[in-house]
Image 1 (cartoon, rainbow, N blue to C red):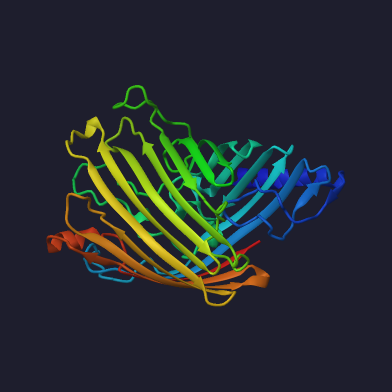
Image 2: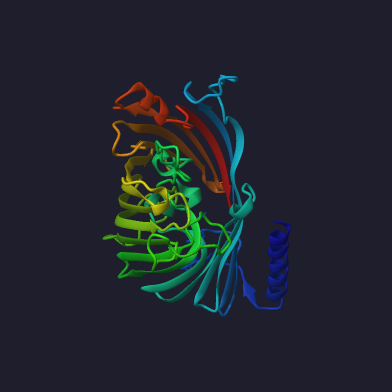
Length: 411
């Protein structure tokens, strides 16, 4: 960590020395390629440095979140020696991000962010650069978001809810003694290479290949045992249609209350495993979003198949589905209310029963100082299980009642 921080400080000092010797001006960023996936940079006022020639631009940003958490668990799965239903509660810092984005030589854009609230390989939240020869053809390399599902494509600081749907973040509940990994439907951030672009301001495509190990910075992959010709990597693609132009990356913003945008998208990925008691995981999903003035509506449906590797010696694959629908509305230019319904058959299609998780949230934007307060309550229900044991086991490690108050500052 010290080496990374030292590198960032050293880079800033070099930049400062270079800029002092150049003819610079401070102005609002208006480059459409410039993005951070953390805070909005398009038409956002703040500190930026750019040469008059326009061949270099530098924009620092930060995002800090502090949360108060309350989680109540049912009796199943609790330690018999310590029957405490309230756990994982108190104060936390979900994210503390420091980063910078910019442009070099009028064709390359870049983004780099550290997350001081994480450790290990997750300390480097993302680090990538884009080569932008044309709107319809761009190349991205580094650590960035896997192109799968709209919930992950939204800018981190501009979501309607302080946490993602449980159906995306909860692990599969596989009922067997020999199972080395329980994957989630969501894929998050990973290390890889992507070809992407926008055609006629309506069609967006992304095709990428990643390590498939959750953003680890090591190159430690092999060839697949089951598919002899295929490296054990994550292959992903997403295609979106936006009939009214590019959909913004937020889920409702006080600075964008007169817009009208519509999005439909399909996405899929295949995570190939090797030499492991695990599975080759195929995921696919459909998404739809509509931003209309003060309203934001979106929904997603997804499917995952865990195809066991030959080492597992199992005949039947594990299939599961999930999805959510959510709506948000700005009652005032600063106050947004939101509701979400989320469902997930965590125990697979071969068993009866599923989890459902309604949630409600209020978001207040302190517009003049970039503060946002989010207050959310979420309930976890269980429906349709064949036996009481199946019902009790399906929500293992998941809270029945969740309350979060999150205060966020961005710059």
